Amino acid sequence: MAGVNGSFWQRLLGIDRRWIFVLIGLGTIIPLLRPINLPVAASPRVRAAYAAIEAVPEGSIILMSLDYEPDIMAELQPMSIAVLRHCFRRNLKPVILTLYPAGPGLIERALEVAGAAEGKQRNTDYVFLGYKSGNQAAILGLGDNIRGLFPRDFWGTSTDSLAIMQKVNAFADFPLLINLSGSAIADYYIRIASSRYHVPMVLGSTAVMATDYYPYLSSGQIQGLIGGMKGAAEYERLVGITGDARRGMDAQSLVHVIIVILVILGNVAAFATGALRGRTGGNS
Amino acid sequence: MQILEIWVASLLTLCVFTFLYRDNPLYRFAEHLFVGVSAGYLLAVQYQNVLRPNVIEKVAGGNLMPLIPAALGLMILGRLAKRTHGLSQWALAFYVGIYSGIAVPSYLQAQIFAQLADAVKPFGAGWAAINSALVLIGFLAVIAYFYFTAPQNRVHKAAARVGIWFLMVAFGASFGYTVMARVSLLIARVQFLLRDWMDFLAPA
Image (tube, rainbow over all chains, first blue to last red; front, side, top):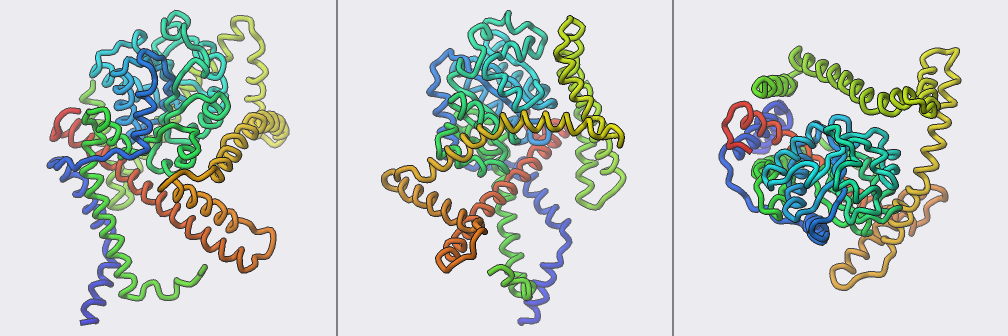
């Protein structure tokens, strides 16, 4: 019996990794084709982000920096649409920019979707300033002269001529900054906008980065944190919409279950076959 | 036009996915195309958004100040030849000096002092107190683990061991989130293929 078990576990350890890819692929495709709509509960971090936007008086002009490119749009594009729709519903007027060169096309699309869903028009209900290079230098510039930094908006209109822009020109003019970012740009905003100019800030990040920003939530340097596609799905639920993030949660859950089972099986197989022998005790 | 975009994006996605089976010419074609297109796109964007408005148009308008940073930028290219290598050092020194001046104070303020204050803040009531205690213990234990200046006595060793546990939990949480992020990328691509290309899913 032990021999039979041993050979089973050994075969399991030597399985071609492409079978795992097939399993993950099926775990992704089947729930998308046959959704069961598992419930999505909003975490305190995402609820805090939602509450921070709710706390801004209606009609206020807020600053949004959407800093991502196609490589992480899977997580941040649904988040952008959900947050924009929330802002539009509250009649907030976002001034939007990006510090990523490949960002404008994605943001333009997010604005089209959110604007059409909530009946909002560009330049009247929101301003899209487009891309600015320089990262930290650009963020420092936002501290005192936004119209100087962006003489024209994304579509070429003079920012001096836009009614929304005539009321704001520096961090201090905004009651809230929303940064959706997949990079160290979030750190720069925390250092400069939040810590130096004391602008209340909500952060949305990729899931990979989310744990890095928990300490800032605890210290009050950011008011809320939306992490990855899961965070975006939670935000969609709070706003009451069903976007790509919520639609993807069934697949996300099933793939996680598959991964957890594979990790357990792999560890049991490793112990059963003694594959770990000689590799333990290195640093204990 | 949009149909063509969707077909190109879908076929390139499938080309990249073929790497899961093994390395092959389809994958390499997509990879090289991506590198080339990205480089060309970035070059065009940097010219349109940086060089043209910040240097060319201003100099053409009679403002010669942008020539100074432009010259510093050109000096960086001195690295390409041995004789002019020294020029790049001056430009780099300027850049490092400016960056340090901007970054160091804000880094200290936002990431050292604010985090220190949070780690030792008065404990809240109920579960918040347990949370604060964990933060404080974790903070001290991890500091103990990374303190290498003096030989470790028994207390220091025990604290460092606790620090390792905290680090392992943090790495585990981070790894879990990383797995979630990678799965999210796959889901979005599959959503694109099933909805936009194959029309199997309801429109967004």
